[in-house]
Image 1 (cartoon, rainbow, N blue to C red):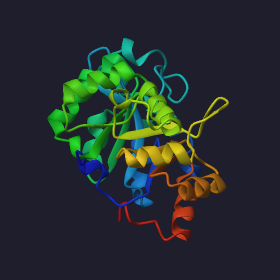
Image 2: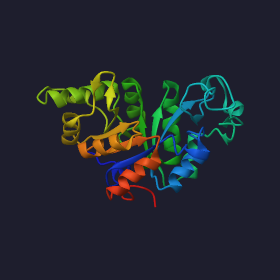
Image 3: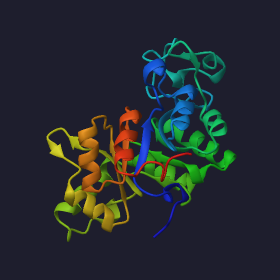
Image 4: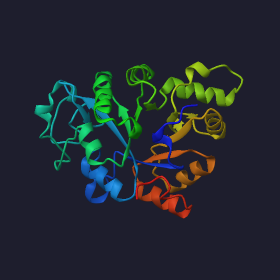
Length: 262
């Protein structure tokens, strides 16, 4: 079984979802100030998202358009980096390229949701150019996109599961003898606790993942009681928009500081 440096730290993993965008940083999700603050508060793992501009620059941003969180407008994919480099997140912080945040925060580990097919090759190019495979994981809500990421980046890139693989893992948890191994691709099952009426993360799912050498990371968990329940269940990581509360939960369990930044 392959061991990835990205997953070498002690468990559990605490992920600051789009950085630390609380209080005075509210509205600054996926910005350098939000990532810097998360690291300053002790977080080593940062969750983020990327799109590619019309000229192939990988931009850190969740939505395909700029309108919700910046003073810009329009689709990222239809504009060049020269057009976007003066856009401000929350009207304050400059929009960042992926290489900017990787260079700025060399001790952080980034879980990157590659949001669009056109961003796949540019994303892999950034990792190659910066030698960042040991501190970047790739995720996507598309199994096909993940297949392409794995093909282009090779075995040194750690990836999450796509929806089809996560569902196959869930089915194996219920029916362990069912031969679904070829459908279960990825080292991390990054999933919601529920998907509609379906309970995804339960004892069977976590147990099957553990037996298969797969980590379970749940998102997006902001309630301390749910954090405690999931940690008791054995999940390997929690993604949160309330990194302040997750830190408190881990502190009370004596688990803070093991895999977080100093």
